[in-house]
Length: 101
Image 1 (spheres, helix red, strand yellow):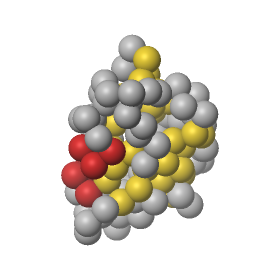
Image 2 (image 1 turned 90 degrees about the horizontal axis):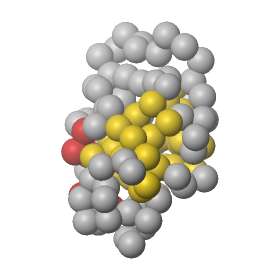
Image 3 (image 1 turned 30 degrees about the vertical axis):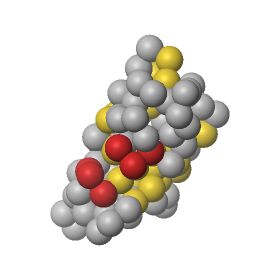
């Protein structure tokens, strides 16, 4: 599993820059700007984090044009999910680790 860091502070799964989910889903496209964290959920003020956040998180990936994607699983050593725009929706996130084949 890759080391996953996340700067989507508005996500209800984010705690201390890590994700509380055991696995995240990255939707994909032909470029980094066309990727997003499909597991993103807006932070409603209550914590969705019922477990200890972990740097090790499985990443399912639909970015077929990324070199790290093997059979819809990310095989990068580390993955960085970052925000762009307002950071308040799934579409305001992207996989900063995306690298074109």
